[in-house]
Image 1: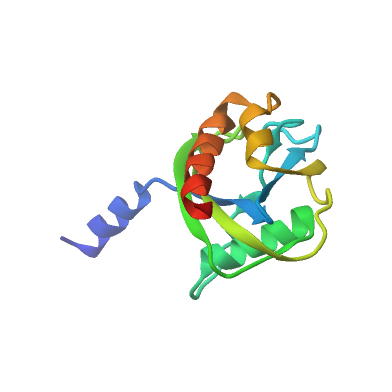
Image 2: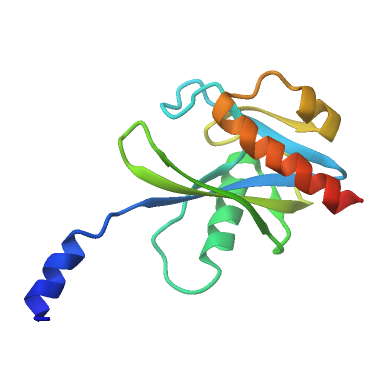
Length: 155
């Protein structure tokens, strides 16, 4: 195959945004954040901190991006041990395809507060999560998976 042909094929490779999200556990509770009402992507809905993976080189890119987003959005530091619990593809309102990776991690330090892009933050125990009616439909499946994992994790 010629170099020119290879370059033509490269142009047809689909481009995805990679985003990381975190369920943060502290003393048996999970932090949820209510997105800013002005956010064009699910504004005013309850979710978890996260954001796009930055263009960077080197190792631990997912962990670095996750730590940065959590620090910026809710003011917390997390432990280095993160566990992938959910992955999905979806489209942003901009039309970009996103590969979303959701992790379970543990709180290390800091006091949760609504910062960049957040209206409110709240810690929920398992019982509260199960009965919380304010969760958007697209997010309920992730919470369901989380609750099953927490049952195994804490037993």
